[in-house]
Length: 324
Image (cartoon, rainbow, N blue to C red; front, top):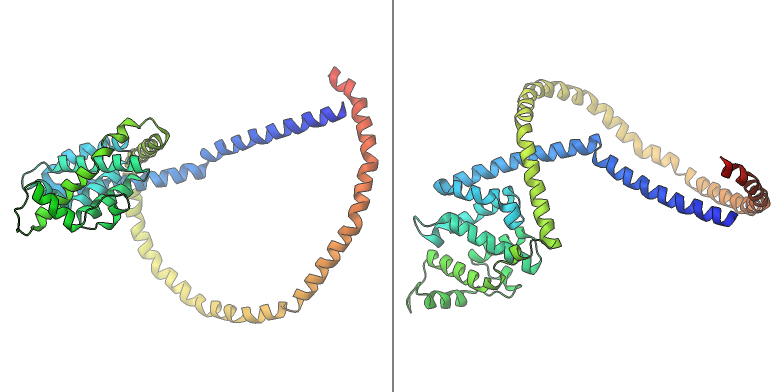
């Protein structure tokens, strides 16, 4: 059945294309370029992690070690990489002492606010980084970012919370520290319903993807940490080379400047010279398509004439093919 044979060939051809695509994806994943990109990203991730750890030490002092431990498990617990967690913690450092007071549990505050932001992100299906930014804005007194999620941190609401919780007495004016404490308390109260949502839905697609991405970033940073010393040494060794190369390149560019300027000045004239050719190219295109229009029907007729012969040849060869 020639028709059946053609259909089979078509199906096998389609299957072959799919296999080729898969092979191409695998080849691309393990290509030199892909490995090079991964190496570059790994070194960058390791450098970013190192900088974030240094920022933690500067911002939190004695509490930095406990916060570092929180960051080490942030990928599985919150769906953010250690670097992302550290950077967010540093941004909250301005509020930590005001919320917990002198000698208070700074690490506990960082853990609570970041975990609640993670649960908040899980419920509202937004990035954890966005939720952390929204919480930071709320603690700073910016009510608008949280307002779109139905949470009201207006000054009047904050004042009422402070009176209800005994942070101030009637008629008292809140200090900056009391304002931050009241905003934090009101924020945690307003988001209490979201508590635990990330852990409860960590096996779902959205949170699983967050955990996977964060874990991959941490893995890149770990791999990059082993490469950083080599790249640092390479960078140091290149500095004197670049210092020597700079004056040489400067002289070359100074010598080339007049030549480049001369070439640039001739480009408009060159384009003007090509202008008369544009109509000719258009005419050639018209003639070309007219020729195709004349030849194509003849070509189709030729194929139709040859096709029966080809089909007969296929039928003649089928017994031989089956025997083979």
